[in-house]
Length: 88
Image 1 (tube, helix red, strand yellow):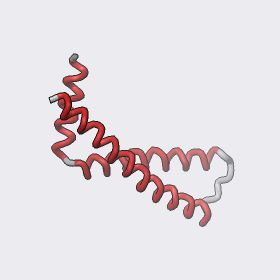
Image 2 (cartoon, one colour):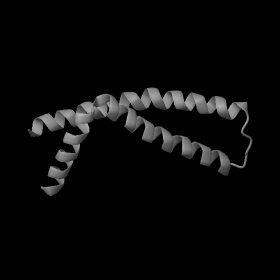
Image 3 (tube, rainbow, N blue to C red):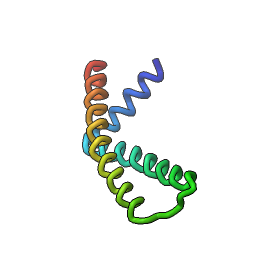
Image 4 (cartoon, rainbow, N blue to C red):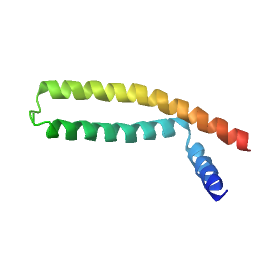
């Protein structure tokens, strides 16, 4: 029961900041982790040439992360908000 209360209180604080803040912050965290993973994978593969191809792929990855991540995090916001309102 304590865990449910803690989650409820955390979401109460998070929703005060607004949906845009939540979506932007969540997408940024996800994006940073994915980009770091991509760079580490690129370094491990042995082909350590940071040329134009790498940066064009990276910019495409960032665009996809922003679009898809923003959409997914918006859906997550509405799911959490639905659960929050049902628990009131």
